[in-house]
Length: 267
Length: 328
Image 1 (tube, each protein chain N blue to C red):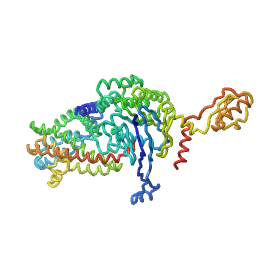
Image 2 (image 1 turned 30 degrees about the vertical axis):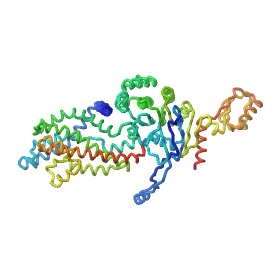
Image 3 (image 1 turned 180 degrees about the horizontal axis):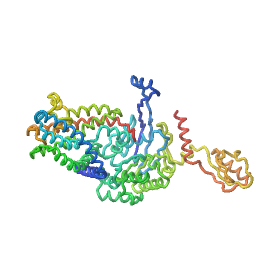
Image 4 (image 1 turned 180 degrees about the vertical axis):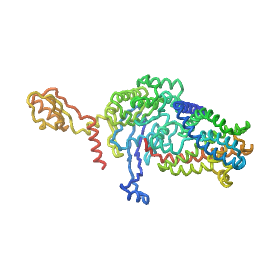
């Protein structure tokens, strides 16, 4: 355990050092990223105002809270992508990772966790600026704050696991971008990224329960902005834990088969 | 003494899709794919003893890198038996990985934007090296490769050779017992090549490590390896002393001399490699060397006569061409 702690600490430190080399790049990246929720926010706020001040129970202030928290959750959702798996196999990077006495997935989790530390620091002034402009209604309780903190890290783990499972398809076929796009489209609709799930048809909301996407995106946001009861908060954490356990078992099984297919084409 | 590396009838076969050029062939390929079975490594067998430095030679595509990848656990063999330090590499146990390293000429394990010292610290954590031991090894290798002035520069600002030296330091910090070096001097200038050769020799001497080295630079092989293993088209062609390889496969010797007096028709003595001014170099069949030397000394006024074995590059070329005939 001590060994893993030391590894995570060192890898996160390396990621932080690397990302601090280019703070401006990270800032521009984040400014580009907030364009998406601002468009959603403006559109849905207009709809809410036209419908007498609320849409699906969301006032413009609640929508502002949703989409400002969205920006943090979106950053927490960033993990090593399936495109990254394609790249690292093609470029021989996976061979380097496989030569180390530690599973390559630890490298991914630790590196992006370190990267998030930088991102969160850079996010704070942006979130303050957005709050001044859009005036969110955000009054979380201590419990909601704590659940949110745990949920965004669990969300990060779930997304790392699901993207890795998807990325491992690359062991069988080297070009799988089309499949990734299909799954990312489903994620956009079923996660609460495009629109709060409460504004979607009931059947979409029910369907979202059975996929991991909602638990990586919509759930942490709703937990913080006060849309959930205490029991719903704990059910949400339970669902996240279940997805992590299920995903970790699946990952372990797929990895054992996938690694035998590895042909080290890139070096 | 038990072998450090032992492989028996080791094979790796690939199914490679193939088709003719053109749209029609591409369309047909969608309906029915054609595959070719490629034997990258074809039942090779050898053993390597502790502390040996062995040259692993062969032309491009011979199966050298595939073999190294199987020995280091990156690839699963199709058949055969492999044992490295008593471990089965394909199981990739952490205890096994802690005792080996694979250095490839194109490998990049250092963080591009940071000084190598930061990446070295990550290596310490990966291999759980105690801090004092880590610092000792790091400083020792930095000193041996003369990197003191460079370790604080971002890796992206280093030259290819400097970067390669850093990669080697990073790969050896955990003091591996077995080194698989796949063209470690690829693309480097002669000074850098020599530096890396000296370092590998010193590491082998200090720590008794076993080294399996592939290189297309014969200077690497001559400087480091007493024993060589030659493969071609996945098959083992030769396993033995480098001197025996030269003896076995060198059909010619080179005679060089300075001729005094009138120029003669040198081709009557052998193939003329060069004839510049009074300095002549001839290539003669090995069995005729004595006779030709006697004739030159008796019939002509020659001085500074030398008889040398063919350059190692020529010998290797001859091995590969013999090998090609043997396996095709």
